[in-house]
Length: 389
Image 1 (cartoon, helix red, strand yellow):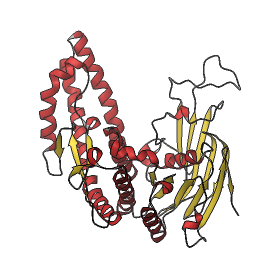
Image 2 (tube, helix red, strand yellow):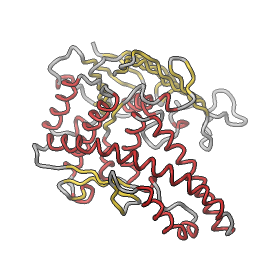
Image 3 (cartoon, helix red, strand yellow):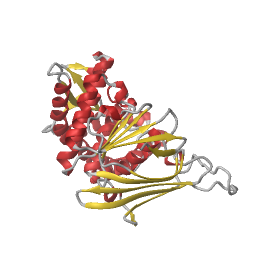
Image 4 (cartoon, helix red, strand yellow):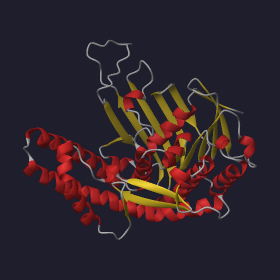
């Protein structure tokens, strides 16, 4: 799988871009704040259908413009296809042409097309392009809040199982409705009979999401463990543990539905008192342990970085096992953060497996590769891309 060509219009600091890329190594060189990361973000958007950072589509539009377009020509095992995302900002009432018309309280309109045909379900969009992103902020997978680890799982699963994405979307809708009802019951002491209906939907979706996460962890865990041992010459063992509501470890084979029902009944009074849902996959966590110790609490900065690299390398193999082809690898200013041994190991894997890779850096790193025939280097400056020749 590889991205043959990328088109951008009014995306971040890119007014217009239309560029072909190498099917293997693409090095994006430039000073900070010139658009290197924006380019990787646009590519990853075509994989997951949204920005990987916690930003809204309306914030991705180039300043003083009212829409953006991301389009990519992709080669995968099914052949070639074009995937495109069009986003239109909502017009500000009373706004005039040429003025900035951002309305932060409104979502705007997003349209996704495959080969020119409008896609109505994200399930039809996801999987045409798969990608693994490795950025400096990915250290938050280890150090950050539970939402960072849930996002890692959810983004990976959604790319190889589009139906899971649909489940997540439905889960969020039911969660919002359930929270609204809990607040209403708390304020008016009415609606308990209605709560049972939402509980049944919420319970079913929660069980399905947790079961899928556990199934994926069952596959991802040995791959991550293997990569960690390779990176540390067998000295370190990395393990994942899935914790329901951050307090009880769950494994494949556990009576998930029974556990959920028990928790639901135990916390119901407190939920009504607080007007919010206090259980479910949106509160779960993934504990990462190194040699049986919580990596977040006891690991060094170097161990955190190595663990994240192991996870990213495991993701490559996971995608290959699930889809039959390697994803695109996006490295956002991370090679300079790795020591020589880790960097050489990563480069060796990229070369051996012939993975298409996009690398951002402030200095040309083409010298790290022995074979330059599959390398394309680009200078990025103020939202423009110029290939080195």
